[in-house]
Length: 164
Length: 424
Image (cartoon, rainbow over all chains, first blue to last red; front, side, top):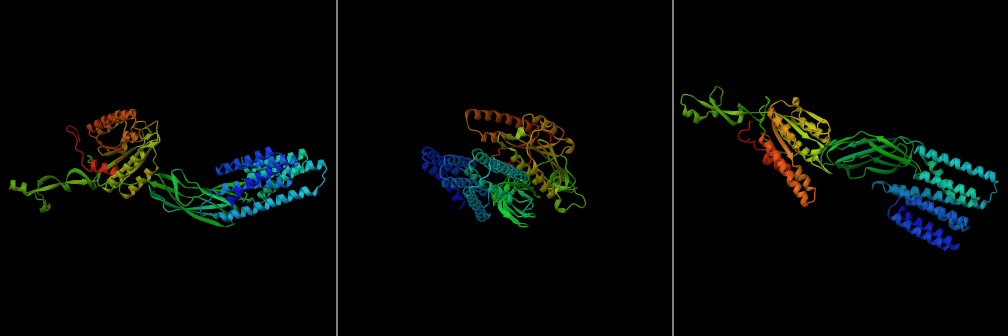
C-alpha cells in the first residue's frame, strides 16, 4: 500500500497544481510543473531521499503562487495536501526499508496511514472551515494571533528536538 | 535537514507570507502542517525505558564457524509507537542469516526477542550496545538510546593438525615427551650399547655384541625422550606484514596456531611472544589449557608498528638458553644479525617464513617491471635464507599459495641435517 501511495501522491499533487495553472491560463507554468513532476518521479525511482522535501517545498511555493494569482482553491489545497502526504510517505518508506523480514510491517503501515489520513482530512476540514467562516479580526489581533502561533510552534519544535 | 526543522520552517514561511499579504488562504495552507506537528508532539513518548539482554550461542568460535546471537528487548516504560532496534555489530563481523535490526511497536511492559547468525574474521569483538531509536508513528522526532548488553566474541584462528614437528634442542626438561634428549634411558630409538646391568630386560640384550665378547653381556640403551621448552615468536611488524590492502599476517597466525597445537600435543612447554605495536607474552605452559590460552591470545593480535621495536627483538630472560625458539616471520634482511646472535647464544632456531615476495607479487599485475622487481627481491630473499641456513638455523620457506600442512609435511617432520662444520 505504502509503495503505491508513494508513487501516486507526487503525480496527483503536481497534476492538480498543473491543472489549476492551466485553467488559469498559465500554460508554461503548468508545463514546468509537469516536468517537475516527472523529475520527482525519476528521483523517487532512484531512491534519492532528499527529493521529497524539495518536492514539498516546490509544491507549496507553487500553491502559494497559485493563491496569489487567484487560481481555484478546490485544486490548490488538495494539491498541497497530496504533496504533504508524499513527503510523509517518503520518510516512512525510508524507515520501513530498514525493517527486517520478521517485522510486522503491515500493521505499522496500517496505523501510519490511518493517522496520516486523519490528519489530512482534519487539516483540509479545518482549512475549509477557516476559509468559509469569514471571521473578521482586527489587524492587531491577527498579528498577535500569528505571533502567538509562531511562538507556540517554536516551542513545540524546540521541545521535540530537545527530546529527540 | 532534520524533518522537524524543515516542517517548522515551512510553517513559519507560510504564516509570515499569509500575514504579510493578508491572505487567509495562505494561512489555511499551513493548518494541516500545524496539525501534523501537534499530533507528533501529542503522541511522542514522554520517556523511553528499554532494557536489552543478549545471549550468544558460543563465546569462542573458530574462523569460519557461525554463532547465533539472541536479543531480547523489554519496554519497562510507557508504550512506544515505533522503535527501531539495531544491534551495533563491530566491523569484521557479518550477518549471515536473520537481521540485526527490528522495526516495531512496543507496548508498555512488552518485549521482543529475535535471533540472527554472525560470522567473521579472526579477532576479539565486544558486542555491548543495541541502538534504539524511538518515536511516534509520524517520525517527527526520535529519541535515541544505546542499550547496554553483555557480550563478547572471540573468533579463534583455525588450527591445522600437523603430525609432528621435528626439533632437537640441547636442553630438555625432566618430564617425558617426544624430543630426543641425547641421553640413554627408556625410549624407543636405539642410542648406545652398555654392559648388562641387573634390572635390564633380557629383550634388550644385544646378542651380536655379546657374541663378540664372550666374557661380558651387553644390552641396548635407548635414547630418552623428554619434553622441551619451546618459545614461539610471532612477528607482527607492520612493515614485514602489510602490502597495501593485503596482509600476510593471517598466514603467520595460522602457522603459529598449528605449531603451538603440535608442540603442546607432544607434551612440550610452550610460550608465545608477539611483537608488533606492543609486545604480548603468553606465559609458557603445558597441555590443552595452554593451547586454548594461546589461541585466545592469537585472536587479539593485529600487526602494528612500534618505534621501540623496529628490529626483531627477543627478550633473552624469557627463554632459557639452549631451548628451542620458533620464529614465524616473513623476515627482513636486517633480521639476520639478531637471529645469528641468538644462534650463537645457543638457542635452537626454527624459522617459518611465509614468503612475502610471492604473496605480494600475486596481487600485482604481471608487467615486465613487476616481474623484474620480483626476481630481484626474490634473489635477495634466497641469499638471506641461505645465510640463515649456513648459521645452523632451520628455515622453512613457505609459499603461501601452498597449504601449510603440505609444507610442514615435507620440511618439518624430518630432523634437520646441519651442513658440515655447523655446530649443533
